Image (cartoon, rainbow, N blue to C red):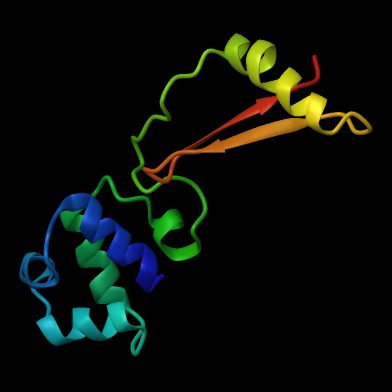
Length: 117
């Protein structure tokens, strides 16, 4: 979780000190959480969600989903994946059939495509 919290700070373009001040927690406690020495408590998480309501707690805690609740994956036309990418990939492994493709974006979002009709 500490790595994801650091990613969140970078995405928000805020320092550890600014983050601690916003949450009204000791700067040292944020430093310890980011270093992995301590785990955040209930009060820390509650304050975090009150001040950053768009943050997806599932992503923060488990790494599943997107960083932000309202984040949209960049739109890729379904046809582009099926017509352009799948044949190229299929040619590289002719003995197997592609079932689905997941594309991960640098903003921690993803888009999944199912190859079979």
